[in-house]
Length: 398
Image (cartoon, rainbow, N blue to C red; front, top):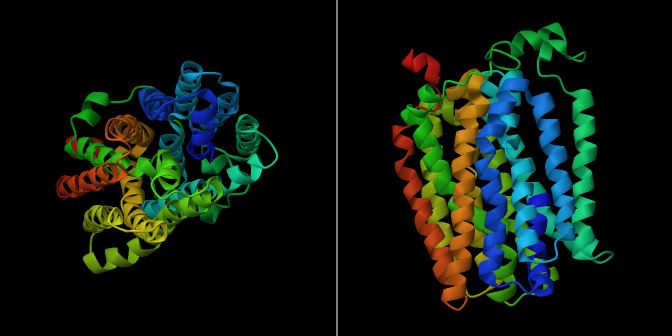
């Protein structure tokens, strides 16, 4: 919610601060650069101290800078705050992945990631409507303060309730604990992460590369989509917010579908590894086709229908990517996920900045930009045949 708020408010911010398309692209990129640069240190921090301390601090830090976004007075101030905002949020999903590794057996991990990403997508999907509703009562500046406050409340609740080791939680009974202990080693890991081992693994490198590819195209929906709807399809702020719901909403459906259908597909293929490869390759190819077709649609309705379908297939990939980090990384799941997330956010930086550059230089040629994103999707299908998404690095190379 905090991240999408900027995209929805971008036209108002650009008008009030007198920002060009290229500058807005840099602002989107500043957040993602901070997110990317500090992703691995934050993930390592999660492996060292455990998810309870790490995730609570991450959410408080990012919430404070989300609120401070409303205080920006020019391009440099906005870009700096967004960089710090991204730095604060860095490590969020890798540390969550560590948490799920602690709490779930291997057979439940893709389903859990599907539920997690459904929540993330739907949070983003309905944010434009929430922003429009809040803007009726306050300025865009105070809207960021309102959204940031929710994170502080969440962090306090989480820290009170959550435990890194399920055995230490008063609500976990012995039967639950026996099921949970089918997974990996629990709790915080050693501060020594075997980076040389992780970064020499073909599966780690390729899982990071394919996540760069899927994120490069997907970040369009987090950054430029509201502006695209308002400029290319000439929609009002309110109507663009309503249309912007659908791509991320269908991302959520794709994540939920992925998590639910994976056990059935695995019974058919006879292998979780084959299932992850098959569904991810299909997701890349279908997302590329539907996003590419969307630029040829004459209306906002038809264009959004195809973009929503592309998003549905996009999220056949994401839960499998994060679940694979859990299985490949084992007790270093947060660090492996941090490497993957680093590449995803570098993709967001390059996609956002490149988008601003192309739009500025081509006179807002949105069709060229979206067609490029569709072409990039197709490249991801060539990574998955060479990834072993279930074999732990430590075991494979010991």
